[in-house]
Amino acid sequence: MKVFVTGGAGYIGSVCTEELLDAGHEVTVFDNLTEGHRSAVDPRAKFVEGCLRDAGLVKQSLRDAQADAIMHFAASALVGESMTDPKKYFHNNLVNALKLADAAVECGVKKFVFSSTCATYGPPDRVPMTEDLPQRPINPYGEAKLMFEKVLIWYAQIYKLEFIAFRYFNAAGASNKFGEHHRIETHLIPNVLFVAQGRKPQCEIFGTDYPTPDGTCIRDYIHVKDLAQAHMLGLVPGKTGFYNLGNGDGYSVREVISMCEKVTGQKIPVVEKPRRPGDPPRLVAAADKAIRDLGWQPKYPKLEDIVATAWAWHQKHPAGYAD
Ligand code: UDP
Image (cartoon, rainbow, N blue to C red):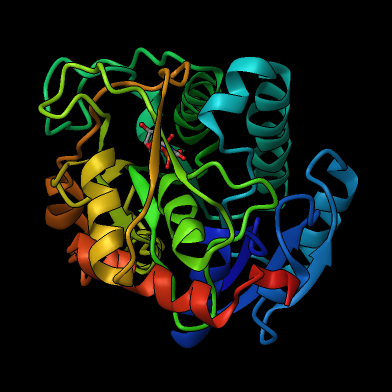
């Protein structure tokens, strides 16, 4: 297939682009490089530097790519930032996504694969979380993604734009070539590994008074290559709807830090800080639907493997893509 990948210079988009190319698909990456990196774009892909705000360029690029499918990764993705700068989230993650969906309809694209998030649920009534739980986001990041999910439902019904939306839990790990490099890093695993690399003196724990066994937040970490695999399965015609992607295992912040100590062989000094606004205490996926309907089978479900691949990538790229 010919696949148009927005955000293909970013973390998850770069790994998905690599997997698509390995599987023989043709890929056009569309990215404005504000968060992404030019050297994270697989050299086998065609690259268009542009912003989704520019509806004309989006349409032209889709036509040039003769795209059968869109994978839409380009987005702002920081829960904490969305609490202080909500307009960035509603513009980038809702308004710009809408422009892309309009272009998809106009250009006759058959499939829209959307990077959604478990943040659309807010604090869940129960874990592991199935797709039918109520969605009550507690931050603008989750809200904007949820609003766009609703756009997709109506566009599918009325314009027949087939979609699949993956609600990611916590993406982590790396492929051999591509890994996680944000210009401002707020995610837990890379920040802990920065301490092991000597790039940071200590790791901060945001909140130690949550209603969890050790008082820190629990998340479900999923390997970026397993996410990519699900996206490939999502391209199959007729597959549609919402799917959680996670491993069904929850790890607390302290458990993640211990695992990073084990993998790196280094002691990680920590400092306890207040809660970070917008963080639900516990998010753990039930991904049975993706396993059942799509035949998805995560290959790297163990936290140790996830951390080990991230560590290998950071060691190979001590300054990320700035090398
Ligand atoms: N966290 C932390 N210290 C850090 C970064 C994150 O304690 O330096 C916590 C954060 O508050 C959350 C969990 O780790 O409870 C996962 O955060 P991350 O930003 O990696 O992903 P999110 O769940 O926000 O998408």
